[in-house]
Length: 248
Image 1: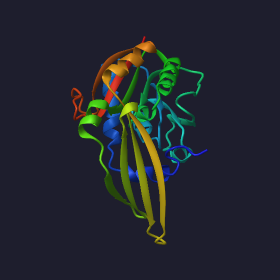
Image 2 (image 1 turned 135 degrees about the horizontal axis):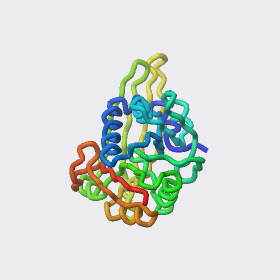
Image 3 (image 1 turned 180 degrees about the vertical axis):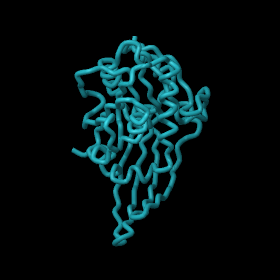
């Protein structure tokens, strides 16, 4: 059974080549240091092609990744302090605990049902040392309703491909969700062939009171929330927000 990102995973690193993974990894480390997380074992939920993980591994962390998409898994970067397994972040089981857990680039927003997020937080609690941190980012409800996602077209170029991506969002207000239909046209420069495929990504957005309620339900304390990378207070113009939960 195919999962989301199994098709897009073939071109994922090209599509997000402008993303500053090094800056994001440094932001994560600043937070861990601020809250005095001295241990170097880190679990990443939804590790993708492993770029965040390898950046953290370069800085001395041991990173265990969990990734559901086989396509992304096959393209994971290699580092002797980064290991990754194929698994669902809602129900994997490892025979160890970690000093911190991260889940970046809106992986939590893919948990569209309450029971999905319950399962993730329950699993994080099982794999996180007491006093450890769970750091994740997500789509922020006030910004979604204020800014409203729009139809967008973008092109990406590499030596071998030209990729055209059309993003068409549908707001599902009663479910705090946006279903984004991505249509891709992948032109192969070598033989001029064009591949078309479509993926629909249901994305849930959250308010801060929601995050706090879920945290309390699973024996976490919400320490802080802020705008991703800038650390500013979230507003109705802040699309991406992060939260830090402490395991009680």
